[in-house]
Image (cartoon, rainbow, N blue to C red; front, side, top):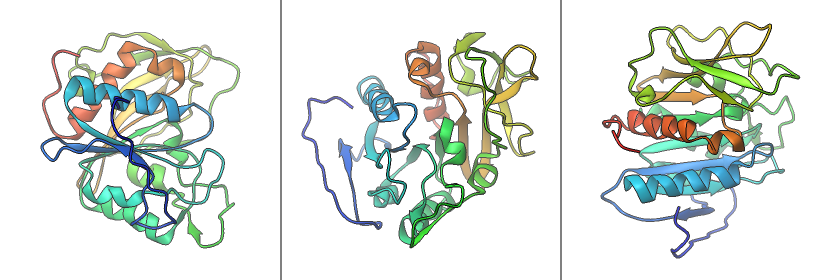
Length: 259
């Protein structure tokens, strides 16, 4: 978001009523809530900059909520989901108090859309290290995203990204030129759920290609996920354009012709 505004910072305890956020209010615009809680890919810097782009170029109303980069117990501010038109998640291995988890489940059960990035495939799986009073959602990746995360390939640092066969005319890929490369280590994500629609695949030498971006349906909710999301990806205009397209697709609005 543009930083020429008054920041509103309310720091409260766990629960749907708490909020730690930066927001611009405008009832006429779709309201997008970004939840950032990871400690590997500088999402606390890249996601607010992307939110700023959505506000300044596309007149969308964005709010960013930050979870602790290190503390894996809860994310203050989940109550903002009550007024969200779109949720963007970049979260890694967090457990949530029951009331916060209910906020997330209620949001998705309402049929509202989700855009998820990289470590969100294991957003609510703490590998059994659940703080007292908190809950995991280990099957979030399969239940909601339609993925099948099984770690990543090691060693090869450059992934070549291409369009999946048959996906060329999908709205999210409008204006997207491939191939392009990514420094994000390639996630092992196949096979996808039958409900998923594959959009992009990633390739590294001597390995089978892996799904790297797709859509899914969770109940009535539109879901978009990509395993990309490193700082270098956000420096790539093609990647950001794809995310803009995904935002408008998720909101069930025409994808902008000019970015």
